[in-house]
Length: 387
Ligand SMILES: *Cc1c(COP(=O)(O)O)cnc(C)c1O
Image 1 (spheres, protein in one colour):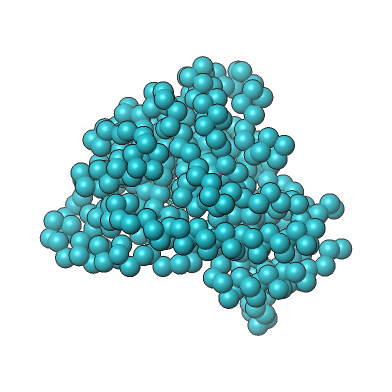
Image 2 (cartoon, rainbow, N blue to C red; image 1 turned 180 degrees about the horizontal axis):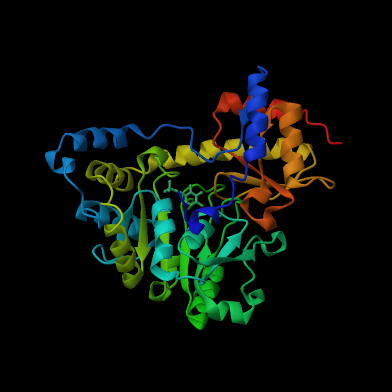
């Protein structure tokens, strides 16, 4: 057998070492509590499950779905964007349901990236922006997100020849892993940059509803002419605790939506009809429970930040997202800090270097740990002794 070159370009799993240590601890009978994974621990709301159960009994949902989604789910998405961001979307041509936003993020590379093409990707960042690029034959160009810039890319620092060559640029606000947020002023600058260099602009925005202290994250599409060159990716995964059901969406520029639909129609057959009904019920139903969810995460954030600060970590309390991005004490690399914390306390945190070279010097903690585990975990974490 001869595997493709493409396959060999996928780097080894970045958390191999940590995974080995976790397995060894568990085998030795020690308790391990993970703050590693960003997968909401709360169940999908009941009214959404009820919608799924009803939808499952409809014979039309037993057939192949259309790749471009049902009118009902597209309308629910457009309606939600109007309600939440006051952004107008054409349900038919500017909205595309996805099998989770990850699917669309990976596939959209095939719409723009040919062999050797450049994608500007945030560093640190969600790995799918660069993996999608690589699988399409392209090359990711890392744009560092620096603390002194509020973890926003310094657009002026991108070399002009790179900007001219780049086909697409990825943004992700509210940001994973840094927890940073972007305001409309930044989004306007990004749109201007993309237009100047004829670069397609993507904002991956699954965390706009997970925000704290009353903060309301913005949408890239609130910028007047963003739809000329941009698409925003969204997801119900984090907002409605629906990671397991796989539903996300792309919205914005008509041509990009059409191109992604073309790729998808040749690779998958769209989102199962019952899941689309489920997602529509989440987007159209009462959003009251979200206040509770935000309150819950905010309390977790506060507890976690307190313990980390007491341990001497420098952190910016996140205004949104599910993550705390903490600068490790002097003398440690990300990997060393994560390994030592695990060794001494049985607590799993992820080394920032796993999200890109500029993540070196940080660790990420996820707030998706159930209360009892979280409290227990923080007591253990507080006992960490720096060398
Ligand atoms: C969780 C996450 C996603 C993926 O969401 P799905 O819709 O479940 O595929 C996309 N981007 C970022 C940055 C995420 O953290």
